[in-house]
Length: 413
Image (cartoon, rainbow, N blue to C red; front, side, top):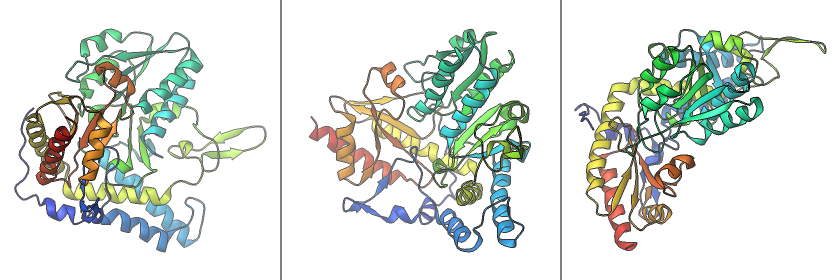
């Protein structure tokens, strides 16, 4: 694992002061929050932006000629514009608001699948996918008669790219893989994945839920066909996310849901559909959520992607070295390229028991299969304890974690 040193001018305590929840105690001890991969905490800027919208701007969007509705519409569409710049999308038409990564994947699986999948076709995913990038494809494959194929992973947690390349053929209709594994932390070689698929005119969807908080995403540089992520992983609110899709695909795909806003004309005989992006945004949207997501984008850009990445990488290196010295520990996921996640097991101890002891010490980690049951089966384990770091975490947090794991090891024998 390469070492990147954080910027000396970076002030993590100043960052922490912008997250009031980090001042809380848990179990009568100062809280150490190490579960940002599940959902990150929210800075004041995001909460205040949503409060202001509800207190001063709320009205339904795209529907009113009166001032308040126009202000709400402007705030909503400003968020779309901010996201467009954040991921370098060519057009705002290609930036769709969804409830999160799960809905983004379901939208593509359902809409693209109904249009382009037939019996005998193949969909490629990987062995490290979250359930939200497995189940939607299983459902559409069952409906269409297509077949799901799975890229295997090594013991270290890296995709076996030679096997992926051999899988690609004239029957492959789409590749859908995770950019960063939520369980292993592996950063997949998505540029190569896309390049190989595009050589055979196969579109690619990337699950960016775990990549968007940590990496600078440029959808044009990647040349990815679909990219989806959730606001709540990147300091934004829950219930809002983004699906980026190339205009050529979104225009060719049928609507995912029917209702208001996504229509152009309606009669009992026939309905015609609105232009992008509204074609895929049926009904009243999560306006406040979009406003909060826009504020999260501005917050991350204020800190800077490079600053975030350097600080988190320093935590990952520090934490991996410290955790590796604990007797009886096994780290699951040791890829050369990793985001700030450490999944581990203690010999003879169930992950839930370790997590419970850490909780009593005021340390919040995730335990279980992390919605990646097939990956757990691949390693022959029931689950792991997962510590995940964000820009507001410190080396002192990791020291507390190491102390807690050592105590758990002693208590559990």
